[in-house]
Image (cartoon, rainbow, N blue to C red):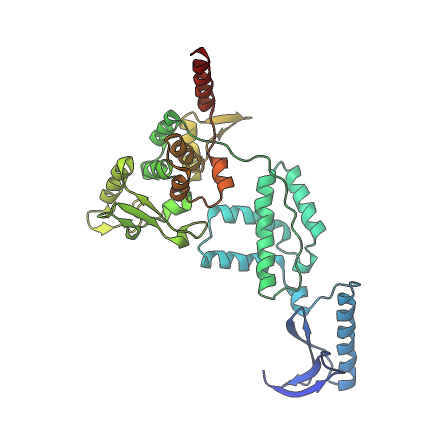
Length: 367
């Protein structure tokens, strides 16, 4: 809107009063936290408008002195649900949207969605954390949920939609997964999986790629004459692309997928792994059913709970590469691990490894 009149208030840095074309009201114009603000004084009389502007400047001074938090107009109106909507849109643009994201953000939205963003304090987040722990959620699950809440606030703060943001507590996690597959367990699971998921599991077992990296793989990423597969950086969790050579069991798998790209004898699928041409998105139910059918579950009350995760295939691939004598740097390049600490956590020692070590030690002592 066009400014038709401006009256500076006091000395430099104390803002001004302005009028817009077609409006009789004066607007208070000022800066807070590096952002310009303009709000109506709801006064057409300049003298009364000055009083409103002075009150705003006094509140800003109290905020800077740590006496009272200042709420700009945008701060007071914005809800946490709107922050989560912006985060959802941002994740879709970055292609980071997933069923796990939606399931983790759901309880946050149910609890905080209608809250004004300025009312979500450190204490309010702690109350939420306590309620989730009382509901027997694991610290890791709670951390993933509150992490999304923190991301929503950081996004709004970075875009200058908020003048401040709360601190999100991070709980100590002691339940780091250490699951992996032995060969017979893996074969039983693959036999129980639907046909469209069997090669997905085999690829993860051989290469240790993440689920999203496998499901996003396209034939444009596969160099059949050069016998290599190249993961695009934008499809990698850490933003780093990588290359895997096609050889051995992987060569047979990729040849099988190449034949499966033809649909109805005419149409060609873009994705290497698909379900009759459609992208594979969420297969948690199919995975759980296969684990139960393969005997890979435990009983919790009356429920049969799968004891294996798809991510356990990634741990298995890392462990087996190290067992086979593959240099650790090469194994990290194949699996896509940038951090040595995380790689070491995946290189799990099983009971079989420990038993072999003790047998070798006893044989050495006897000799």
